Image 1: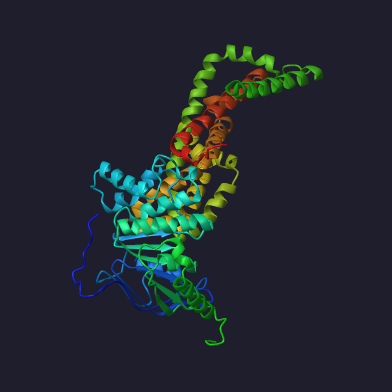
Image 2 (image 1 turned 60 degrees about the vertical axis):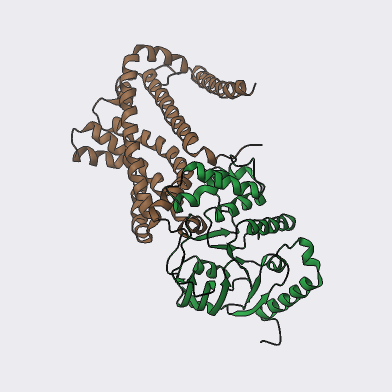
Length: 272
Length: 254
């Protein structure tokens, strides 16, 4: 559970992606996915990343998690260069990937078994129960994942991704498979979790409303190969509600993002 | 009511089958040296009961020993194929080819190789015939593990062994038990193959052979029934193990 503190804190950004270029090797030759990408996320900030389908957003999450290395450029976390996976990262995906043979409680505990092998089981359970209670899953801790609805499974997955108090939470379209109302519920859960347990977050999403509701900044990536096309600061108060999305400021931001996506898709005369 | 139905339905089905069998023999007027009927079986069991127990035990332990070897070797082979692309490419054609060989053709080869080692030969055949499904299913189970499952632990810096122990192994268990159910009957066939084809006078297969030599059809059919019962027992033993170790894979019915 210990927070690995970087030796040098002169860098103000917790996540620093500098000039990252990456291509996948395919039978038809190299497929460039990221092109000189630059992203900076200060500590405690929530960074939403939007962009056209298949533009390399998931590659970005794998790079930040240290699951792969870029062809060129550097990824820095906490002033340390990322070259391999580190214990201070949490991940959540569109598929909640809960382990069917474990109870919900044991699923949430899983990262602690890796990161804190000597932590007493009682403390692990207490920590997991605390989170499950916060996301409204109290009373379901002994159930199997197959007994829960999609939204509940994703809540459990969220608990698992932050149970070890990661510095960075990386989410790859975590709410993409949920219905619109469940999704809004989970946005609010996410907001409350963040208020209770501060973490720096990178969220990949296709949903512009989601990016504005949750993000401190929204980064629009261009079509493949992805470059940073636009960075939007979201100047809404931290205690946002769903109603905040219906204010003129939010409407303006959503409109701007929509235009940027259109450009990213190459459907705007200004660019192509 | 439900438990009664659970027991009554299969029992009635078996009785109907026996009745049909008895009827066919009776209507054709077949004598005992041509075809036995179910009513001939209890006297045959009673007459040779000590032989059934002795031979049945021999068949059983050899089958289980062969199956245990198959589980061990098949799992290791499956792990190699599941984790290594090269191992998969190298081993797959070999395994498929070996599996396609009718195992009866191997009996004389083995009998000549390990002459007189009857127990060893039988266990070996039970093993050879039954490891294939286990190796394939473990291999496929491991190689088709969704990358996200690996990533949630890999992103925490977990070692390959930890990922295997905590995720890959339990996730493959349902496939493993599915294969084990096939393998258990195959191993049983392997054991009896050697006992019948390679003359040495041990196991239920040998008892069948002696029935054939003496024209004792009731004995032969009694052996077949004993084999069927033993096969059912072994199969449901595997089902019981599956319930214990992979019961989570069974979805609650509603």
